[in-house]
Length: 378
Ligand SMILES: *Cc1c(COP(=O)(O)O)cnc(C)c1O
Image 1: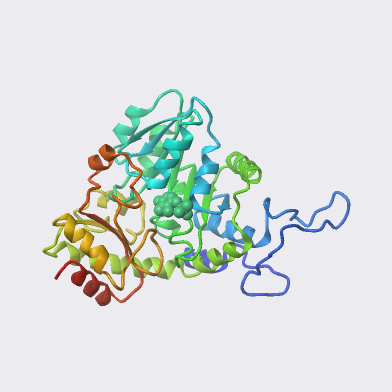
Image 2: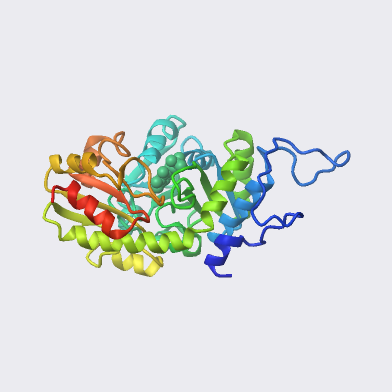
């Protein structure tokens, strides 16, 4: 089935006995048993709930996985994921990750006895150089946040195939509509469903998706034990968001490409990082492994005052953290998403005081251009 249809109907369609076209919100914490030792298939909502189950099946189908698990946020998905590992285990991670993931790894995973190496995973040889006998996983984002580095997923998968190392890909930026890491050899896909999957800046959610039965089982056990599951109403909101994922991704990407090209010619802009520009270093790999470039842009202004002025002067675009929704949002990574990254690490990646990150929404292109032009000071 085409992914556009899967977004709307999931794999099985909605089989509610009433014929309700929208999946009902089963707002029940618990489910009565039909007899001793018998179950309707639902016992307690921390373990499973019909609305959440429909969402999980839909996300699993979109990623071409066996199962998906829905969490109360992207970070709670990552926290559950990291419970697969224990003291002494070593993880190799991209050196340009979402700031919250870096905070989790440095503050929580290290305290729990894990060691981490952050490396430019777009350089497969650099990943190989970091591998140790105790390495248990490689954790990548592609494209990265905010510098838009692209990692060759299949190349990293080939590198670690013969060793007992999991390849984990945070697929938040491109979504399964543009990129399906499991098909490229990844073992687990991570999502912040708060972003494009939900798509409306109104709900927090997270996902883990895998194609391997033993990983599904382990993750389900951790999830039911820890209890960071997604609520029925929030599950319904994300299901509703996913129905329009295909059209949103197409249109937001179109807006982003046009804006990136326009920004490149703007006199107050010195650099534009957008994977869909042919001069972007990750362009060729993207064309090979993804069917689109997404709608995230970062760009550098001539000076710090201009960058700060943009944040103060935008009107259509909102100055807010987060991304992936129908509303265009602009952020200042150095003060927001990446404030907790050590300064030396930020500088090494080029995350300075002239860098802005733009999540391009669904507004009319001309309004976005006029807004940015005014905010950049003409
Ligand atoms: C937002 C984000 C997260 C964290 O997700 P939350 O839903 O905010 O907890 C993880 N990874 C990426 C790439 C993100 O953009």
